[in-house]
Length: 258
Image (cartoon, rainbow, N blue to C red; front, side):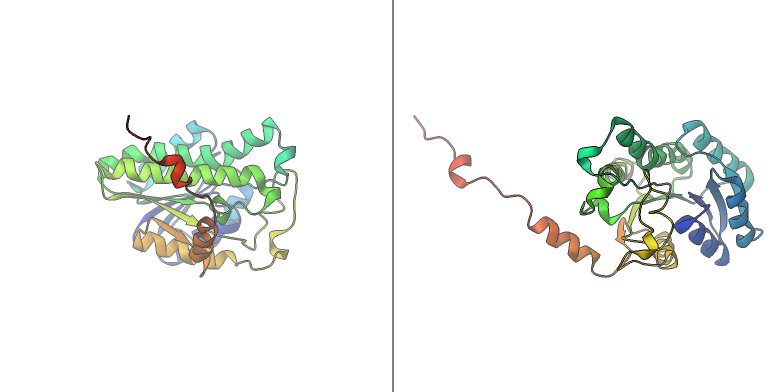
């Protein structure tokens, strides 16, 4: 796999496992996260083809620097993976302004900045691939205690689709893909805003290695929208199949002519 991949949120969880897998398959990987020590540990496991960059993806200037430094080091970028994210443990009736702001800042703005800052490089090359890591909660908001996280991932899903439709009109070889895991056995739950349950204790989860496998397959296939476990698509179809009703015919019928 002779490509250059930027993986944000690479110091732990899905990002760390993905970076290691890509490095094993021969990719050059730029690892981005805020925690320098943890990032160096992951880079050490990835080997000589990995370059760690300490940066905060919720700060646009940091994102710009990562793009510039990656191009300076490798000459180009092939794939950009927006993997920064944080959950929340708070019911919707308890949400504060700060809760909403933080969920949008971390889960939406980090991806928005990544897409906007790498896009000029992709346009200049005529090709590129952005992969945004979303969540099943971005399709089915069934975890009440995740509240604003659910909303942020719905926002991310819409933003990804809008970028894809806009950019393909002029640059059809630039793809924006969405990958939606369910429960993943990482420290995600423990790192949620206001604390939370360890995701590794929840039922019907996946190891991060399984999610990384799917992301690598999306890098190869460039499919636009992929879940990480069998049956997820049907679950979403069933959910939306029971939502909403058209108005009664009598309400929408044309008024009688005079």
